[in-house]
Amino acid sequence: MPDKPLAGKVALVTGAGRGIGREIALRLARDGASVIAHYAHSKAGAEQTVADIEAMGGTAVAYQADIAKRPDVIALFEQIDRNPGRIDIVVNNSGVSSGGLLADLTDDDVETIVGINMLGPLYIASEAAKRLPEGGRIINFSSSVAKFPLAGAGLYSAAKKAVESFTESWARELGARGITVNTVIPGATSPGMIDGSPEYYDFFAGASPFKRIGKAEEIAAVVAFLASPEASWVTAGSILANGAANT
Ligand SMILES: NC(=O)c1ccc[n+]([C@@H]2O[C@H](COP(=O)([O-])OP(=O)(O)OC[C@H]3O[C@@H](n4cnc5c(N)ncnc54)[C@H](OP(=O)(O)O)[C@@H]3O)[C@@H](O)[C@H]2O)c1
Image (cartoon, rainbow, N blue to C red):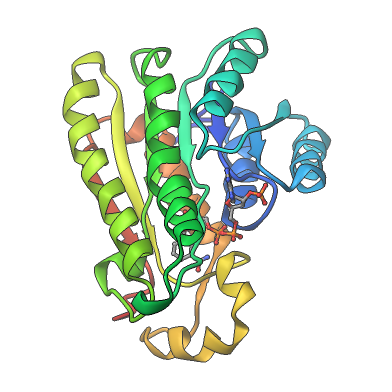
């Protein structure tokens, strides 16, 4: 593989101010991509991601949007049209895992979980589909708990399953233009949302024969492969990156 397989490419990474998204942004930049480090609330985090990319000699910008709001996503792409003026790779990394037991589910829970995990990636991909060139990439994010649903995470799991379904449909739609679409399915990963519930580290680590949880850089490596020209024949697929955990 060439040293900088993504040289000349522009990658949008949603949620690049922290967690897995930050590691993805740094990895794609190391692979030569210019990065659009999107954030919703983590302005300082996204600016740090940009600064770290610039420190390694790369280029990046930080743009804000609530991806659950379509006008925000349209405005985000209008900013991208102005600078850097192109987009080749979209990583739909943003996600939230809040929710709870069926009897406790509120309207806010439904709006948030469906809005950010399912509608957000749809709005992003819809705008990207108007712009991605031949060789373009869309990389969606599901979760191991969509494969092994847990009590209290039904809506999150279902929203992530919807994204896996989007992937298969969009791959067939966009393949005619030489664009690939895939899903990455992480298990418990740090830094990332699992850090908000450290009481679950042992549960998830114990579910893997490796007896540990994943590292964000290990998820970023999978994204880097899917984003690379080497992955030109990999599409409509999903890669489970969860250390063979059975949960
Ligand atoms: N870490 C894990 O254990 C794990 C396991 C399975 C799957 N995943 C999936 O991996 C992806 C990354 O998760 P993570 O662990 O890095 O989570 P995280 O550390 O909790 O970060 C969540 C990200 O989502 C963004 N986000 C939240 N609300 C948003 C909104 N309204 N609009 C746009 N972006 C929003 C956040 O941006 P701001 O901070 O700027 O708001 C943040 O960058 C998610 O899709 C998640 O479902 C993670």
